[in-house]
Image 1 (cartoon, rainbow, N blue to C red):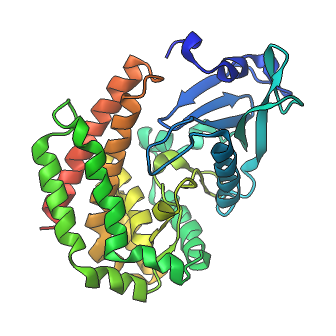
Image 2 (image 1 turned 120 degrees about the horizontal axis):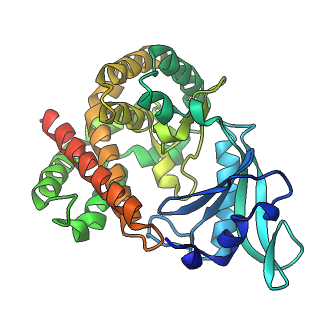
Length: 339
């Protein structure tokens, strides 16, 4: 996206003088729902005014509320990383950060993590080891044990509740079929598998009975993990409770799928084996491929959404489409392996 097409406040925040701290070499990262500005030792995250149905940031009031949710929920696993709510305010014919004028936008101020310790970077360098996965597991097991899991949350573990999340993905991607990333045959085979698995209500009830439906992270993959000490697992789902109230298996399957996707199947197997042992949860294994399939499809869908966003430049859009195609191939592979 060209500079002039960015929102005015984002253009303002790309200037070093906009910040009360040193902010050399400012860089902007976009997703389908966020503008993220890396500025000196800090990160500023702003929500795009989008409404995808399952996510609604369409009004300033909603964006403020979900910023507050994001701050509170992410402090469960990253108490020191998430600092405070910030604002961009009107200041004459320009803007100011945390100013006195009318609020233009709400955002989150975060500490900046060391780039070289981001899990994706460590994986790309071929340096990810079992000790890193052990550290993640040691963080996750007590997190899930202490996470909320009352009767209202357990309802989200029922087959019909899980089906709402899984089946809507197929509806939301129908318009992208045969446009370069997802074929009609793939959509048909994956959706048929998912519907058949969802018909086994007893499997889902067993997970509820085992106390495995919790207020989880919801988006746990390598891009949201920094291998610091302690490990930082950030950017949980704040915008829709039904994506966060889920089976622990769905959470850890996301990271396992991500490891598979990056050609680290042995480490993926190790991660699941050790997590199952340390959490005493052998029942997770019966659900694993189903949730890997679901997570791969979600990542493909997000790639399509990002590629179709007019705010994203053509190079990024092409890369997102290419990645989406690979994720749909993985989703189909998981579906076929579970039959």
